Image 1 (tube, rainbow, N blue to C red):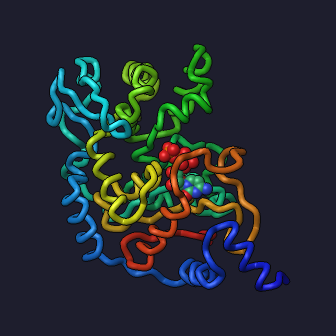
Image 2: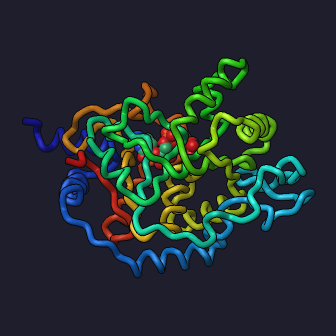
Image 3: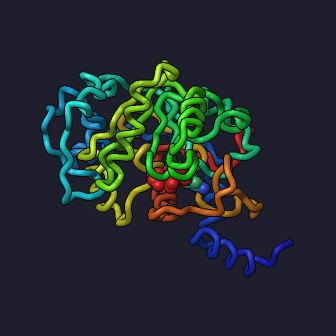
Length: 316
Ligand code: CTP
């Protein structure tokens, strides 16, 4: 049995949460959860006020013109040109302008999913969001096999996992791994100016490939990302929001009930057992520029308020 004082210090070091907060989290993990539909509608209204409406989530041929200049979402001073090639990548209309889903799953990459048996719960939703092209094969029991929208943060993923796609065999491996996904592949093509030419290479490959008929490329609207970022700044999240929080925000706009799995950016679980950072690789910890602990606390508050439901433990 661990000394309570030692435990409290350990918790603070690992999660930046105090022992009573952890106790509360444990209670929340097992307590029944009640959806707050009015709260979700109010949240959507607030997003609209920040011009983060779901209508503008992606670039379409209706909301852009060839030759138009748009600001990069992360380099707001720099302008990108919507070339005719980029325009050709875009659908006429946003597939999200009219649809709403009763129940969604949003799956983060945390090692908390290992042995979670959450696959069935995740796949039981009407629409499933996944972040950053994670591995599904071999993890189906814990993370499920279905996907409807998956993000592809080109620079980090292609560089780290596909060797900058320098060779034909890197590209083939990339396309092969994409074959396990369905629905939309969301790319932030106009995120960073320095990443454009590289992201264009990937977008071309995706646009031309005949081997991924189940996936449709969609390009994130940089104005929407920036608006969502501005919105979260007002909630005291000052660093760049993570892909996970962006996708959660999108889900709240599209889904009556939003269920989160794999959002746990800590090195131990609720019972202090050590965890991998990602369920699917051996990365030691976040390489990123985000404040995942603050994001986590914010999402936990939203769980308490019934805006979304976090799954913090095993699903059985
Ligand atoms: N995540 C989490 N806890 C972890 C790992 C990931 O809460 N241990 C969430 C984060 O919100 C993260 C998302 O799951 O954005 C996807 O994980 P990852 O691919 O690691 O994302 P990042 O590299 O942080 O995201 P970005 O693309 O924004 O840099």
